[in-house]
Length: 140
Image 1 (cartoon, rainbow, N blue to C red):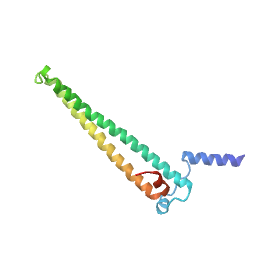
Image 2: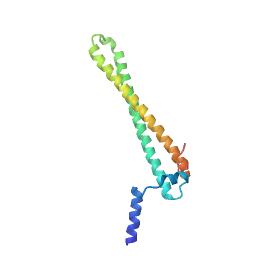
Image 3: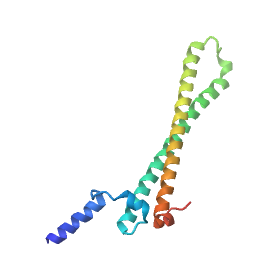
Image 4: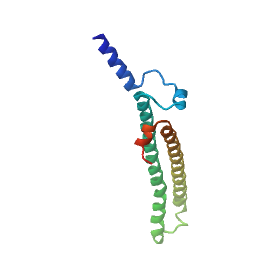
């Protein structure tokens, strides 16, 4: 009974990731030899792919934030005959500054997500070069 419990805890430790850290320098020098090392690479790839998905959603949000001011200005131009822009300058100036701020924030989100996606791609390529099984799993 005790042997089964020990084996079960080893399996749980391996699944949770509480086992001692793998020597990264040894993994870089030689290709992975065990299934556990393959699983480690696959888990790292899954983590990187989930980070890339998050970056893509941030990119989508940034694009949405950048397009909102364009639609606001489109409505203002379309309805410009109904009001005098000079007399409503007190309302248009804060609106314009808010739109410029939204464009800047959207651009920041896009640039940041683009950089993170490129970082994830680079790290995925490094993982692919270390593990031939992972290279077969990830399509280009």
